[in-house]
Length: 161
Image 1 (cartoon, rainbow, N blue to C red):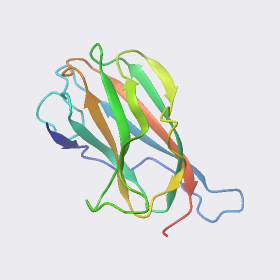
Image 2 (cartoon, rainbow, N blue to C red):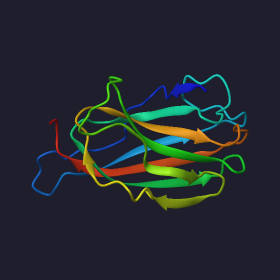
Image 3 (tube, helix red, strand yellow):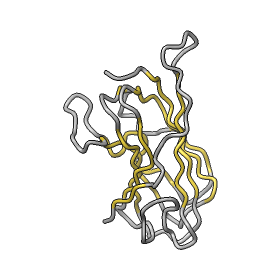
């Protein structure tokens, strides 16, 4: 099982902390694979396989997670799925807000184009106490397609705890 990291992991966002019109923020993260199944713009050297993880970017500390929209615009290899959650950048878990590998999705289908809202209904909104990676955990078959998935993570920028 390999652990990959995108080479550019800053979220594309515009944050309005403290503004009178609100703090709702949408952070955009993209994962694309080459025709050989390797994660583009990453330190990956082999095709994405079952159990591999990809750190897509950073969710800032103080960000209150609300929802996520997964957009598969170019399908991945047949029967591919993924989980999407978060893990703290410093590698240390937090007892009040534990890391969660499937906070948004337990098994998002990647093998067909479509839009899917976060479907892990057993979780409630939470505020991250510190910076966390948005982590995709790949399931099923080794990738061999040019696949593209975008994740739009919605939340409220409340600032550091």
